[in-house]
Every structure is written in C-alpha cells, then in structure tokens.
Amino acid sequence: MIKVTIWNEFRHEKVEGGVPGQVYPGGLHLALRDGLAAPDLDIRTVTLDDPEQGLPEALLDDTDCLVWWGHKAHGEVEDALVKRILKRVWNGMGLVVLHSGHYSKIFQAVNGTSCRLRWREIGESCRVWCADPSHPVAQGVPETFALEHEEMYGEPFMIAPDGHVVFYSWFKGGETFRSGVAFQRENGRIFYFQPGHETYRSYYDANVLKVIGNAIRWTGTAERRVYPSMKRAEPLEKVD
Image 1 (cartoon, rainbow, N blue to C red):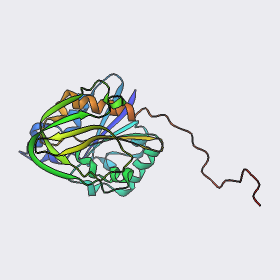
Image 2 (tube, rainbow, N blue to C red):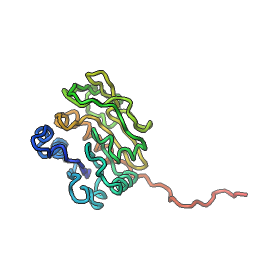
Image 3 (spheres, rainbow, N blue to C red):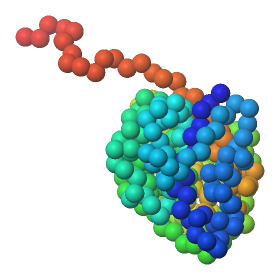
Image 4 (cartoon, rainbow, N blue to C red):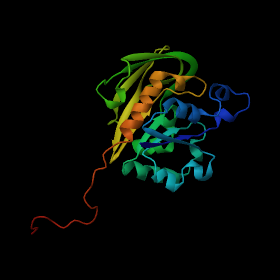
C-alpha cells in the first residue's frame, strides 16, 4: 500500500454560491480521493485550515506521496512546514504538485526558481500530448486527449531546466505548455501536472486521474538510496 496524503488549500470551494463549491462539493481533495481510489492506495485528505496546517509531523512522516493543490493562500503556508516537506522529499517522499500549486512555496523550493508562467482564464479547450510514452507516468495514457475547458498556462514556464517533460499541452488560444514534468531531488521524485482549475471538471476526467494515479505510484515508490555519511572526510591517499 502506498500511503497518500492529499493536501488541499480548500478556500475557493467554501465561498457561498461560488462555482468551485458547485463543481466540487466538499472540496477538490474529496473529488481526487474518490477518483483515485484503488486497492494499492491508502488515501488520506487534509486541508490548510486543519490543525498544524494539515500536516503534523507524524502524518508527514507516515506519507509516501504528498499530493498538493493550492492557489490563493500560498503565502499562508508556514515556512517551517515547507522545510519539513522539503526534508521528507530529500529522504524519499514523493511529491505530486497540481495546477496552481506551481506557485506554491514547496514547488519553488524544489525548483530553486520563481515557477512563474503566462496564464489566461476564459474557459478554452486544451489538448494534452504525451511527449514520452516510455515514462512510468505515461503508462496506459492515450497519445493525446482533450479537455473541454481549462485555464490556459503558457510558456515561458520558469522551472528548473533539469525537469523531464512527459506531457505538453496546446490551448485553443494558441499557447503551448510543458504540462507534465518530472524531477528528482536527492531520494525524492516530484511530478507537476497542469490540469485542475477549480471551476472546471478536470478532476472527473479519466485520463487526468490516470496521469495523477501514475504519478503517485511513480513518486511514492522511489528507491531509498543510501548516501555516504555526510561528515568531514579523511583523505584516501597521502597528501603532501
């Protein structure tokens, strides 16, 4: 069993009469939990307003893969929590960052960049293309699939240059985007996936859920490599 913790900011869905609450009753995290349910996944959901911002140390230490969705409250996430998550990633915990989580503190930390991009929200269609069908996250995913409505994210995407592109997206307005990107940071695997605006039904789409499920399994089962002791090293050869 892969122990999965889905972290959702859970602010948009609480606005009375708002579209996100109508599209995702109970929150994006519950839609993801239900859509991703599988015998090999032990899924827990938490939110920003839960005690200790949803991720007390015991829960974080018991997580194989952390799925992250945030948007309007990135600045409220405590720096101390980001440091704990980053340390867990270095030690082998998987991290799957979704949609507007590109601008979260934790995704900026693993990239060492601003993670800025172009955007437009007018409900245009989006076509996702698989750039690397050999990658584990692409297994069982069609060569291409379309989403009727999505928020446009466009290049340039200010992420670390070592990211391996698994999916590209093309938007009706003309832009393209590296919409599915894989990273390695010490022991930890990270995957970013663009679809998932809070007013559209992307998290009910079977192909989107397939990609996220694959990303959880890929990031959540990384081999824990044993590094040499990080301390002052004595010379192996005689130094004059």
